[in-house]
Amino acid sequence: MSEVSRRALVTGGSGTIGSAICRRLAAAGHEVYVHANRATAAADAVVREIRGAGGHAHAICFDVTNDAKVRAALEPLVEDSAIQVLVNNAGVHDDAAFPGMSALQWSRVIDVSLNGFFHVTQALMLPMIRTRWGRIVNITSVSALLGNRGQVNYSAAKGALHAATKSLCLEVASRGVTVNAVAPGIIATPMSEGAFDAPRIAELVPMKRAGSAAEVAGLVAYLVSDEASYVTGQIIAVGGGLG
Image 1 (cartoon, helix red, strand yellow):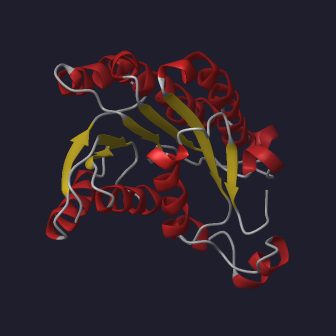
Image 2 (tube, one colour; image 1 turned 30 degrees about the vertical axis):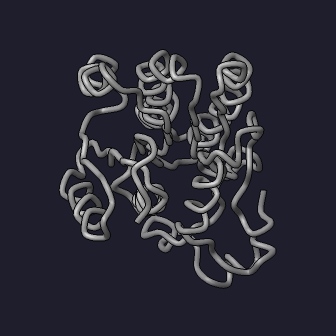
């Protein structure tokens, strides 16, 4: 295990993709804050796994849609030392055909993915800028690049994150902060297993298989590294040719 280098926060770190990112960043030497909203036991389990492997991790719980709760949780963490790596991974699905989509389904998905990005990123932005080094990675979806039936809300939220990524990178590039988006395709998770069987995956994905959370985490680990210091404003699909 390498020496602790920088502090990192992964929102939605208790889920399949989020936990893979947490483990990969911890293995790279980062001190990782594993975020959850309700899945506190899952976040604690990820922390135990990382610590058991010799890494540094902490669980942190708050609702990304509530600005006051976000600031109450994060502002004490950055009083003395910035969080320099932020992975905005929190997101939810609430699928329905658009004519039958409720206002609650629309607002809930937008609130977590897009407003959550705003609340968390803004709370950490100024301390990060002051260090003249930072990495922000927004986890989005190929749905935002290609569209997907029944996911107008999800595609809209993630597409807005793509636009935010492009604009924010322009504001902070001169301060040594990069901003990129990673757009996973069909990744093997409990959620996708119920939505895509093997024949459907073979039909949709040029590589004829689902991706793994570790493959997403590998790209994130590169984007937050020193080696990626000249990569910013990019939207990179991890989709086996889809996207």
